[in-house]
Length: 333
Image 1 (cartoon, rainbow, N blue to C red):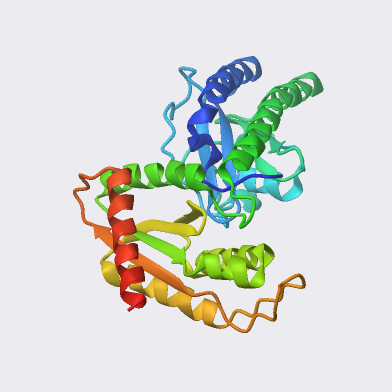
Image 2: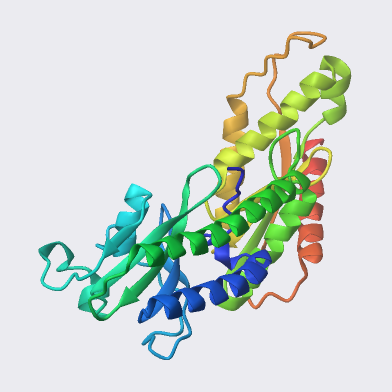
């Protein structure tokens, strides 16, 4: 599966809105036909846990709005068993069964009956579950269980379309030389980061990095060596940033990093890591005009934009770019 984790939860992606509207109708109809108290699509994240993406709108549902708060990976949930086995699971009556004594869905919500089927990506990885809950014991005949599988197929068809879309989006947003985001990809993610920063009052930090003497690398060692130097810089950046940061190659020899920061020191730490990583790079290019006995050097510029954020991304990038050229000029003296 070629899927970038741009979101903790795929259903937060705006392109999923049309699918979610369809899934809502599926869940509502499924819940009605099975006579259940509530129906859900539950999304699974193997690092965070389980989250209700949507729930049925029937009058019997005591929780018609999803909270969005995830349940941890180790919570004793019905859905956890479905995800672990990648197979359907039916519990007609969990009351007085020790194995569910600490299940929050039983203890806190009174759901003693559960039937769920796994929702899988095309390569077999688990997206989540499609499930119904009931506050009374149930007895679903085989035709009803088979109907759940039909509803599952409808949702998995949308997951296949989303994956195909994501592959195309990935190709259009990725720099083929370094495998990093290209400028379009970087700016798309940066706009998302800035929207979140404004909502939660974070500061934004931007770093511009430029490979020094690109012409020297191409002229003295050959273009293959120049490409190798660019890849080395890209890898050093990718390995040096934090999980919450984004980065990309935004021009021929220019790179950018954006993330939430406390102060300029956070950015200085990243740049120092990049320089240290490059100091240990050993480039081997079989087609080089001469042996390479130097490591790529960079110039950098960093700027912090404190909340409230009143500058556009373009203005922020221009300021960081100017800082980088000042650094480059000072290093030439």
